[in-house]
Length: 116
Image (tube, rainbow, N blue to C red; front, side, top):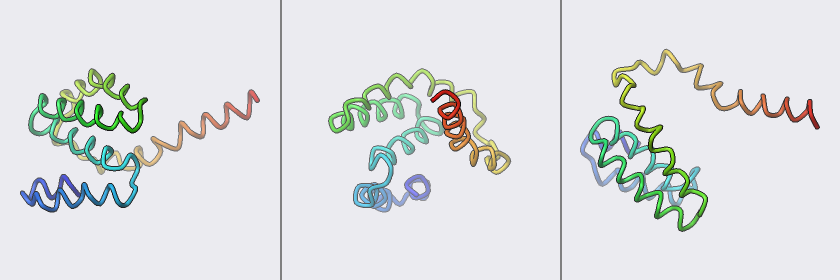
């Protein structure tokens, strides 16, 4: 929603979405929304601004969760986003994303059952 409002130049609503993330207790709170938003900025506007905003948000969030500072190590991987076409049709990959998260969890569960 923040990206949608940002594209429509409705900055007040962008701020409201960020505030909603704090009060609604979404995953990773406002930091999670910021990271998604900063990756959008990185890919579609400015790599440098997106990276700087990501680093700043991570440092601030690491005050509350010390281990989050290690997210900065993902910056070289984020650099690989340059090779992703910006006009990709995400709907073609819809079902792949449905399995992307649960499949590794299922594999870990099966491994645990086999060896424990």
